Length: 449
Image: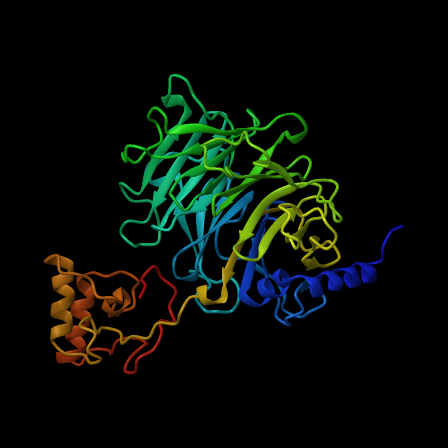
């Protein structure tokens, strides 16, 4: 019997009444999904508090970034990570071969406007070229890990914006921390997925070997190339074989690993702390075809701490919520899996990456006075002098670097001090907005507060 869409919605509403996950995710977060089939990033938000994102509800589904923007056309957007100040980093593994930085500066719900997209990383500055990059993971220290499994590049890169200019294109901002070609006996050969644990260890899914590995920088030299730093965590086999490990996730010592081919998710946990996964119930099938709402093909999964898991089901081109209601270490029971996105199937073509941001992650609106480099809410001779000190004497930058941009050129240089001196003492033009009152910068540029 084929259930009508109205029937599917009613069934989902029954599940919503049982599950705290749906309401919490809908209220507290904005979900971003990159779509490699239609080359765009979609923004999903439960605005009406129904517990679902519904196509019929105005404003709950919107385009955050696509080829209509002023930025680069996407070719294969594959993964997302949270950036600074509410921005989003987007990995494009197609012909773009870059990490893009998207920031909704004018707070209109998208990153389609001039100045809202920039290159965070590509090979233009002499760093390693991305070949077939597939996963982008954010670390608490502001760095990012990118896995690459192209024919000539089985490696992991570490990116970090050390000088706060919104990119990782400068010397020392990119490092190859794992490279199969640098090892006499390569361990990882087909890195399809990455996840970062709280202790700094990386977990990597290798589809060729059908295994999950744990990588940890034991000697603190900043790479994962030394003996013992890459260890087999679990070799899948038999009835619990994972043929295509497209996503892994880690939370509180538990690893979830999924198979893109079958939709199976394994739960891996060293319950007795003996350093292996050989004991009873340390490797279990968390989701498989026996689920009440089977998932056919998983491109990405996201653990929402204390709530549950969201997955991208590529067979339905949708978002599915999973929650272990009865705490039996699986989501195979009635009501434990359901469609979180209620649409006609047209929202996505090939959903490929998930990112959930809380509303508190929205970029704050910073208020400053242009030219006020001393941050005393007035303009006088001390301001151009302070700017010159920053430029030529190595003095610390102010908390709002944008305030030094007296002529609003988007660049801090000697012309800013000259512009301000002309205004103060020669009848020159006043600084552009925000001036003479405190306000936000209406101009999109790389300078920040």
